Image (tube, rainbow, N blue to C red):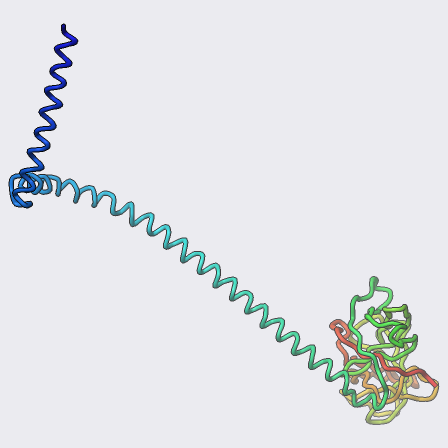
Length: 277
């Protein structure tokens, strides 16, 4: 019986809810939004308005926080992209400047006033001497390019040395500062003939066979003599006088010269197609 009573009450409640809903809909329709229900809705909005405003104030900083994170990440990505583009532009500028300098050097190697009509092969220095006992550099030209031992090697400034070893695609250049190097030279002012030998140093070289009676000026140019049987053609700049000393009782004066070529910074050189006569 108790179960039956509860079932009847549930049905009554259901019927009451349906009737209430139909009545509310009818009233709302007839009042056209201006009646009792509209007043109820308006009151509900007024009642919940402070709560809604408070919730908005609470969650607004949170929204701003996450929005700020998004904007910060965007700005960070844009800055990173700008830095990459700036680095690429700097690298391109450096490569462009280097290419310009190399092009100028290549052009200068093609117009060597002191070489006259001598043909030549342009080569790039690919390595330096592996030891301190021999002052040499290796270039990327060899017998396949017509290079043979004994050929002079120069830059637009002047003499570098001569070819000492050759393979198919490589050659070794014996620098004029190597102790095994000897160059017949002439003083441009006095026209005195002498000989420059390598000292194993890259700064100053001794110039021998200069009489004590010869006036040698500071800064005087020294060029290859080109005498018959010499290792180099004439008029190639070798260096400039940097010091002289006369010792009583000696027939020769001590003269030192500074090479005109910076042998520590060789990049491109010219191998002259020339052999001693």
